[in-house]
Image (cartoon, rainbow, N blue to C red; front, side):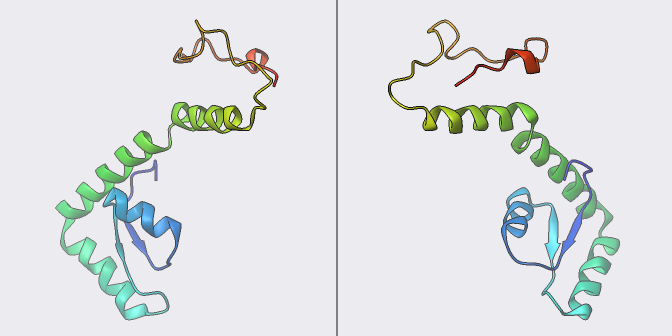
Length: 111
């Protein structure tokens, strides 16, 4: 998605939900070559729409799948697994937003 290309999608599932949420592609019925070809032609006939899809796709990928966001989701997951007997991070660090400069593989807090 980060490549920012308009998509002709011919499968069902989570990726279809993502593409539709981003408004970044056209769905064609799986196993129907005529529908798939028509979807490609639709993008070719309407370059402005294809350009908008590319822009939305890139923006959606940056917004929803950034390393920062993925790291925050992973931390929330790990915090949810922590037994109540283990303390959390010190209060002054509990809500600190990590920065690129602050991150290092050597700064990983052991559980």
